[in-house]
Image (cartoon, rainbow, N blue to C red):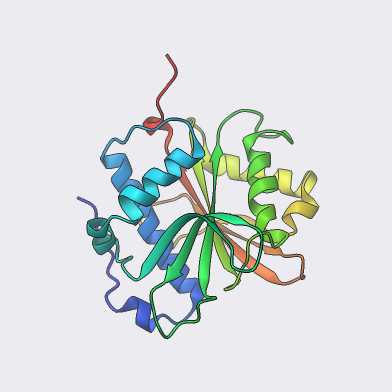
Length: 225
């Protein structure tokens, strides 16, 4: 049975955007665990995986009640308010006392075992077309916090792969990542090891944080016959 988040009244008493975003990530992980329990079957496509997570779970009213995410609105493929970016997931807060600029963005990327140390594999894409979208202000960082989800589509050692992404960021994509602190494991989600954070400079030389969720979807992906 999927555990409920103990967060009654959380949204109206949140002390920091950082804690609020962590609450959001806990809810997303619960949705991911439901997907695994439901034995969902998916094609190997980033948009399809994201849509399944968003439509059937994050925007499912019964699931939102369990995960305590009813105070948030999740939208996909929407234009940014102040930039030309189209975000994978934009998360807005349903609170009339909060500024409309206080929203969060999550970028989604697939990750596999191919060319993990190269400049053209999916690890490189995670940096060039993921992290860099926050660094170069294609996506806003209104609260100085945003997120990325890595959809793991092949069997892999996830912690080891994070090390490879860090090495690529330092050795090959230093300007694209503008990394202050490398991707490092976090411990705020119960019974889920694969959550991390990193800090970066954006084009205005302001510091911001990216939280990273690595969701192992390997067993859900339809294998080619």
